[in-house]
Image (cartoon, rainbow, N blue to C red; front, side, top):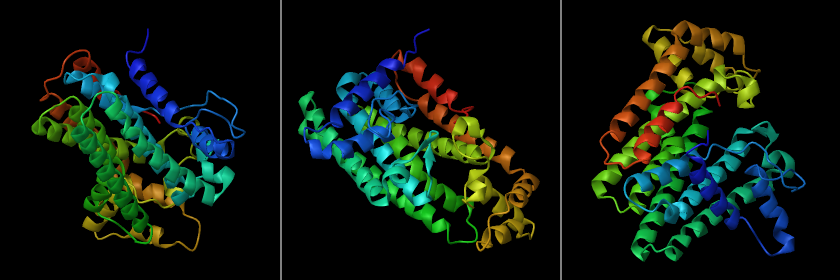
Length: 341
């Protein structure tokens, strides 16, 4: 059966491809590196049908716009800008985490070096902002375009703030669940909130509806990040494209780890903290895994994912959505609960 979401993804993809072109032969490799990251070409810049991202954020945006009475095709520049901002952050995230692979392929910095990796991410962010200005050409007022630009700029800052907190966690022996959530709301959830709110903004929704959309996006973004943390420890490497228990091997302070810190603290234990302090030796993944298992971290993390999904669906039920978005949005949100990558 045809996927009813394909038209939204294809429209976003087309808008992104229009943005990632240059007439200057000397700059073709820069745009080639961006296209490589997006899965459109191989490392020699030959066209390739590699595994692309899920394009979740632009799809949510366009569905919200359509569901609230807007012309979703007019909103595709904003949807494309969202996805470009997301991918700019991934290029930089790969550098900051030292990850050599993404979607089973070498990352940009792993092929072309740190300097080119940083510059490629910066270029993609700049193209995202320029893409927003295409909203004027499809009929939106200058005020609406400025509101969209401000929303995405605030979101980009929130991404950087969340990443700052996440990087800062690396030098600390432990973190709390509240600190984890503060980080995740910026690093991941903010862009989901911008997707939902932006769809409402471009549909002409009221300020109250836009606030509910943003809250929905925050709840779903938290669920998405916590699910990512689950996969980073217990995911199938053949599906995720990352080694088994990769987050434990790098001592990342993800949701299951933050929960285990709290579980041990309540019982006067510091076993996991001691394992995370021992940075002068490779991480003892087996010992860390035993700490998480003792605390029931996997089950608790699954419960936290479900709670945030349920909160997102409850907020969605308060919105005056039209078909087909009224049916497609709950289905798409629910499908993320059991994802495996």
